[in-house]
Image (tube, rainbow over all chains, first blue to last red; front, side, top):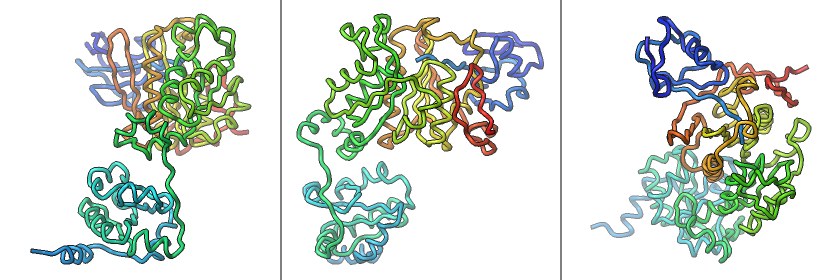
Length: 66
Length: 388
């Protein structure tokens, strides 16, 4: 199925969770902040939140430079 | 047609009046707000200690900015007890539930030998310098005096610390502490606008102090030419009202988080990488902390520093300026800060996105089941230290 990640299309397998998507993108669930269809996904719910076709995912990863 | 007397009597029937002695006892209770509704020239000649001054003519437009809690106990006074009776009535109409008017007003209070003082004022030079702030209701003279009394600690006099320091200094923050252990290098000048060619080789804290002192003589700059570490962080941050985090690596950011939780000092966070910037506010035990937002840092190989990966020089200017703005809002207590929200800036898209960040019930630092915070150096994994 297709989801939209930060405005770009991405293909994910059916039944994929938000964590699966993060791993597919090479991101770790401990250092990324995720919104799904405009709502924050709590960290403890990242693995149990299943993606649906057409979901809009916004994510941002931590940076530390100053 | 009602006369003034009729109107006053009707008004007084709707409000509660208290004698000066009862007012004094109420004021002694923490949380009681003392409200002076006289004209500025009356207020300037003497007022109750810690009074909030809103002339009666501005009461309706200003009170909600200055007294947010509608159930807070308020003691209103004027010179003799008439204007404050009308003011108390107005406040009740605005939904303030616990307002009294002081009988006899400031004149009786003073005659009875109770405590009063001449309110501190800006000097003529300061009135001129901060003119544009004084015109803004949310700052005004009271807010400007608050800024002059404030103490802000800048962690780093680099990319983020430069714009943040310049704007905070220009705004009249009275004490700016700066910690940095580096010396000015020519490669810093692409973005670190506190420094210049003449300062190459100087300690960054000394260069920053020179720049800020030249900009605003009101600002007292306190410098710490040392590495921020577990051994000194609690002593250094002690007594500051706000910490501006412009550090450049994950372990230090976790250290700052844990120490600020212990000392309950809000942190205005900024971080940058190439074309991306982020800013937020960590308000200890009120909003999320850094560990709620980022429980673990990315692996080191995925998180190169700006020294390794580069950064566009304007980027820290934008994020550091947002940090200065959030700091001033925190100091003044106005507006909605970024507490609970992460502002993410992408310079290539020229877009700002806001992510909601909640407190994490599982947070090992500030969650309900968190252990005692231990301040110690962090390695690249930044895991909280267990209490031994």
